[in-house]
Amino acid sequence: MAEGRVTSCQPRSTQRWVPVGTHTRKKGLDHETNKALLLKHVTKQQAQGAPLAELRQVLPALPSSAVQALMHELRDEKLVTLEGQRRWARWKLAVSDA
Picture 1 (cartoon, rainbow, N blue to C red):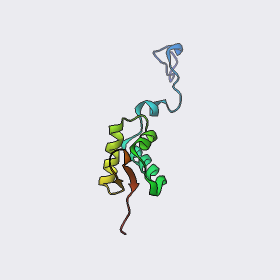
Picture 2 (picture 1 turned 90 degrees about the vertical axis):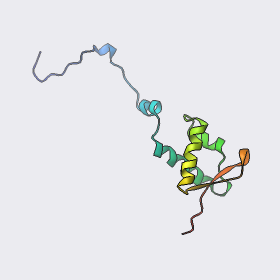
Picture 3 (picture 1 turned 30 degrees about the vertical axis):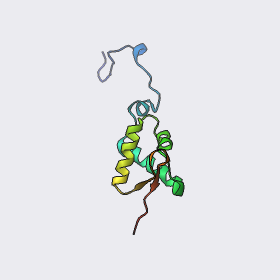
Picture 4 (picture 1 turned 135 degrees about the vertical axis):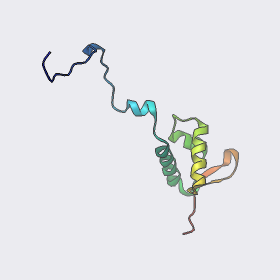
């Protein structure tokens, strides 16, 4: 074998080609990125607010409970508020007092 030459233990026919973006689709986005996407959507909705069903469409890979938990975190950070109850509830951008 020539010096400096790198060889693989696997023959070329068994090496797989992985399309770009596959890792992200399988692994998903990180926690803060998910929160940022939800906050961006709520910001776009402005006065009318966004129901949970609409927010679930922003992150379809996550279960409803995970989207809800992310929204509660944003509420705890005082970035969004929840107005209304049950199916009429809407997430809205929090009004800053500054």
